[in-house]
Length: 141
Ligand code: 5GP
Ligand code: ZN
Image (cartoon, rainbow, N blue to C red; front, side, top):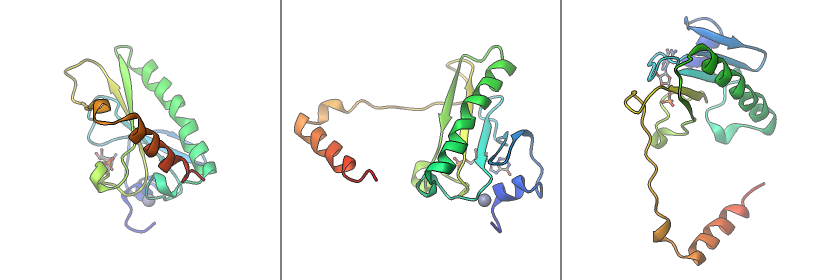
């Protein structure tokens, strides 16, 4: 797609630090290197975000994630963990609108990545949670 930075990287019009490539995906270092080895896996097909994937594309892209995760683990013996992040739409911190999966190696509690999960369980009744689950479940197609 014109004017898409990741399409240009895939097409080698813009340089990147390539890690892996096959018919479906391209993996390369994220320029920000939140932690050392921070890698992006992108589908070669331009799709904006997760809402545009069909099952075939999803199986191609997400099947490659463990392969690159293991490569990071082998490359960084001091790696203690790995966060896999996929941001969708601006509110959720997506800034490049060609879908991508971040693989962020973790080294210690003071490395430069953080994520916060609140626990709001007590704000809900059993009935409300049942209703929320049913509302979502009936939309699964
Ligand atoms: P998002 O915020 O959309 O989840 O992530 C986009 C990521 O793309 C950011 O982490 C940013 O550092 C990375 N990025 C943006 N432009 C470039 C670029 O030209 N080359 C590389 N390698 N990464 C980029
Ligand atoms: Zn693109």
